[in-house]
Image 1 (cartoon, helix red, strand yellow):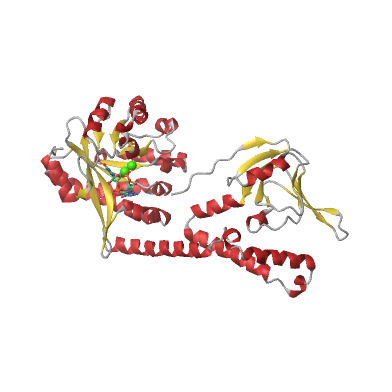
Image 2: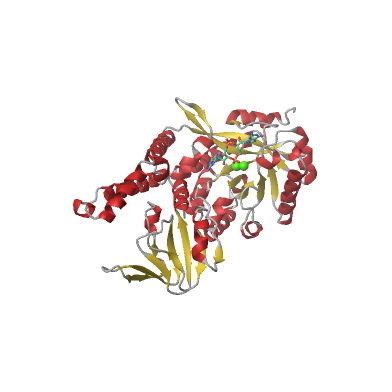
Length: 441
Ligand code: C2E
Ligand code: CA
Ligand code: CA
């Protein structure tokens, strides 16, 4: 999953130069407007951030042979300066002054560090190694340069930093990155092998009509039947599968499995039962998702409205225009769409309005705290009212207490699933559960 964009702040600073230090340490990329002639940094200062010009122009001033100030260059929109501060905290070698009013993003070292951690670990490892190599190159400067006393001091300083790994190696803890990258690579290989060897199976969790307590459908939840490690739950492998594209294969497989199961539901008289399939947001970035889903459903001859795709808001926010097109395509096929984990993400009204969605799934974190107090009750009540305004159905997830069923019914939530009724079960057991009808609770 792609990490959400970091917030940035737009602020006009009267004395920008003095206020910068406070913001450099905040760990966020922020954007500021600087008036003309603001000194962004001075030669000799130690700083921890780089600058990216959004608009305006900046003069970089250094010393000439005689030690006098000299304009080294002008730089403009799209250019980065002061970037060496991201890899080491040696003094600035030049002065930067705004030559016009400028809008500038300030990139603190911490922000780079945070973003690196959010990246695919393979990329993080590569970048860490590049930074490490860069540092080594600087340490092994040619003898001719080492004779220069200023450089000598510079090198000593660098070496001194290298003896303080906690601080100096903060940005490029290559050992940790190596370990993580290797673990992910191995898991990715295993996932692919597991796919080939058909080790992934759906478990079905019954979804009930909360008023009649009859099973009306199931959510297909993936499980990995690992030959050595036993049954592995999705939280152990879906995040890596999402980094590595494997999730597309897993989700497609679950859709196929859902189609295969449908005739078994028909056999028990459940011709109007639906199966929910989870779709990672990554699928939404591929162009052929509508075609591929359409092909699968046709191939199995499944009535499209009996497949409910569960998507999360993150699938919608990465590229809303594209997501809108995909959802429209899926709707035209006749599928139904549920917004999963509702209430935990952005939960913007705009989404409900813009996207063709049929149901909201009320996240387990709310349902499990329903009995805790008025606040959660108010949130769940608000979600259900909101859904009603937009003519959407609601499905409560994670119902564990009998008392919560009547609360949900009173609030107007018609469907639900949870351990109170049943955990996710192997297919045959789930079907047997549906046949038995209402289990005593
Ligand atoms: P989810 O889609 O929110 O699924 C609901 C999770 O809550 C399931 O965990 C389910 O077993 C659990 N659950 C349901 N009722 C209760 C309850 O009463 N109490 C408790 N404690 N838990 C309950 P599970 O199966 O481990 O799945 C975790 C997550 O993995 C899912 O969350 C979903 O995001 C992801 N996932 C599962 N299968 C797939 C899949 O085929 N494709 C993709 N992309 N993601 C999947
Ligand atoms: Ca789900
Ligand atoms: Ca959920």
